[in-house]
Image (cartoon, rainbow, N blue to C red; front, side, top):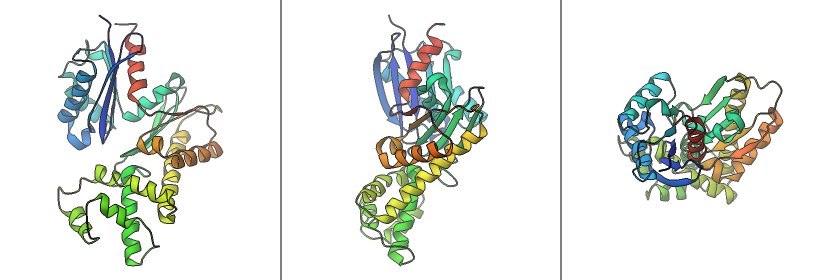
Length: 309
């Protein structure tokens, strides 16, 4: 029986697991709900990751190796807490065959030798990098309240602010308000207050991020306010990557850039503006869009643990 290797991309909206065989061929995949440990806690995050790997492997746990990138794993305490919760499920043949890190780290696995810069913009946003000396750095990823500029949640928050400012006459007119209300299933702007501020009615990250497609649609239709939100988001995301680059040492070489997350994958305006600015500011080598980070994660698990299994 072929040994199996798993990769997991655990985010603030969804968790995707992909399992490959010893030849690197995909044998199964599964999508479940979010697994950010700061949103759902360690036990629930671990349970969802385990469910995804169990289904993707056709129930063939334990795996010969697994590589798990999880949003919310931002410090040693989170890393230890989630790892302990995961080990309960016996996901791999031995504990040391389970690699765990932040979801930003696994997109670097799409670059040669895992060296370069990574940027995610989906529900949240984070930039991450590793230089040839093995040094790592990150920027943004502070959550919707104080960071994650350029994320879906940030774009949704900006859209609501711009819409009500336009309604009041405190800001420029915009076409954003009607489609935002429709998305939220509201009939009146004043209903926003009850929705936003009644405890439990509006989980902020996912709910705000659900509004980002409205901004993209209105920007494509020519709404200047929506276009400005996207331009500002591209600038903020670029700045995060620049901060990571400045914290590392690439010895004069042009680092590669891996980009992932629904906004960067699905909105060409954003990733074109980001890459154009970064080419001017720091220079870039290989630029890779990584629509399914669980794929390079699974292949990394095969590469790292396959020869030793």
